[in-house]
Length: 232
Ligand code: DX5
Ligand code: ZN
Image (tube, rainbow, N blue to C red):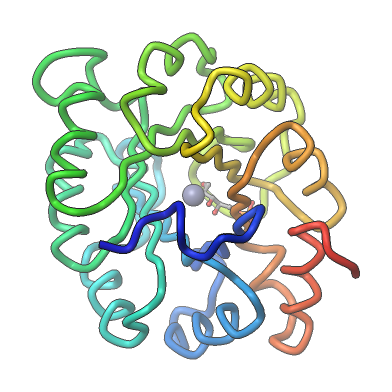
């Protein structure tokens, strides 16, 4: 199993979201961002119900796994029924699955601990996401049940939205409580100009779609280095 925490041992990890890639040239786009220093590929899965937009399914994951056998595939499920979809993405080669706390019951069958356990049994790591309007108290009781917490810094649904700095306080709270082996991811509106805010609050996985794929391939290494806090 490829685990999130050893792949690779860089801080923070930069996760280009393929939502802003050119879908007609997806393989080449993904190769370009990995060559440019991207650590993970972030797959934004939207079901047209949990959020209005529809994006990609397990077949995209399978094709990327086939084309890029060593890539770490970080799947972000913005779907109403994550228990239904998570296994299909793991079978298709996902390394990590994040589901939303707003989409599952707090406890019992299909709840956070149950779903995270099923994801791990299938050989992937599990993450729990929360929307900007969801209080940090909704995930605090579950932080020990998952490998990663994803703090959304935009309302999920599309790339290219403005970063919401008010969510940084949630990261600071979680950072104090989480284990050193767990990761804190931030997603939405992150650019070279504001990535420092996420890093300094305690995030060690930074997602960026438009900031990375919105520039020509020749500039992506500089953008990824800047997101990580190195140069540029
Ligand atoms: C939010 C998605 C994000 C988003 C990021 O709907 O989960 O991953 O596409 O896009 P940017 O980086 O352009 O805000
Ligand atoms: Zn995402």
